[in-house]
Length: 554
Image (cartoon, rainbow, N blue to C red; front, top):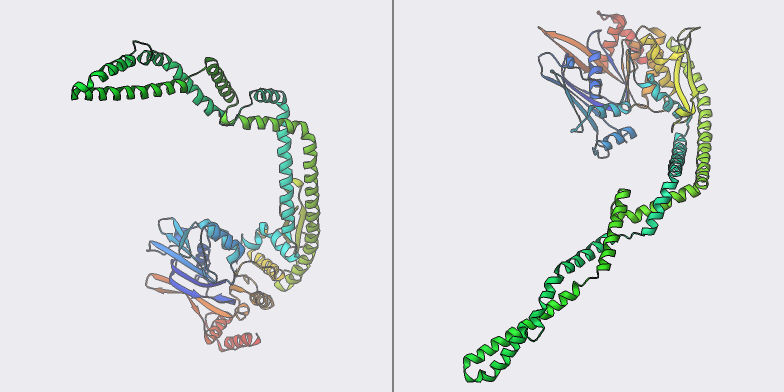
């Protein structure tokens, strides 16, 4: 519920901090005192359109802060703040803040974290419900009528929703399979041709890389073959360089003992022969490694070119060809076994459709029965609210199949007829704001146990009525407020006397400056204000006595 409202520089309100509690709170004051400003300020903080005209004259910005306390956050609020990435500790108040600039533009915060105004609008229906002369939200909005009727009926829409999702999923699989079979059948000959080609080719994953490496090695061997062959004369033959070195080594060996320098020369020559031998071994190994078969090179190149040509044809990488082969096999299998597969999917979809129809049909019957009970409950509230000639009807219409949804197969709307002989019409079509507010009160009483916003506000619901009707309105407001929080802006002393708390709205002027203030009243002040409402500008003793009787009666 709403626990505190802080307003700064909104029209005639310079600064206002107002605390609220549960039960029925009434707000009274002279006409023009500024009661609508409070509602405008509250509307601003729950996401209504930002109007720079709300900023107090001479100020560059205005702000409104509203605090709400919940034992447990409503689901729509929890979902909204989680989607926005905001965390609220259990038991922590929900604090909405909106700032409005005089030159246009606004900003919003939720628990001191910046948010979009859209979030405030999304969670507002669970926080505050305002009913007034030009109500276009809450119970007037037909989009919420189905939910209210389902709560009243005690129907479990979740089962219908689950059946709907199962049906849609089964139908989706069936439609997808039909499209796949149809598409594959049109291309059957082409797919078969592609499959035959790839089965002959029999590609393996990673084969391209292996072939490319083998081809590169054989191409090197081909390029170096002449150079390696030309080096053979260094090591082979009687007149090769190495043979001459060996002959020189034998000759030098015979005379090396004649001088130390000859021994050193022999040692150097022996080292050269050893190095030459190692070089020969390396070259022989290279020749063996780079040896190639021209026929093998031709085979590798042909295989590589065939694989790459197939990849280009199918618009994929060579390594993806095995997957393409499997894809073509699957496509043909779908065509060949498609009818059987489709028949199985059709059975599943038909069963899911039947399950949905049964559950949605049962919910339809439950709604029709609950609609009759609701019509009776609302009708019993109309006469005491001076709506004797009015009639209320809950319309439950079965929709065409293409408009069925997870909510069922029905369109639900609350309709009224305000005069005998006139047709039923939506709540929003009512011309009289006073009648609309009283209709909504009757609905709220009938739906009292079915939930709604944490805080409900009625703005001048008693306009144009008095006496017994005003007393009936006050009694019903008090009854509604017994299990929650309800605020009523009222001109009726009978309604004001029902309040658990009383706030007086007043306007004062100092020179050229006009201010609106809101003051919680003590018991004595409350009696005086009710007396003023009874007698007018001059409060008489008789009015005070009548105020006492009103308060004592309650």
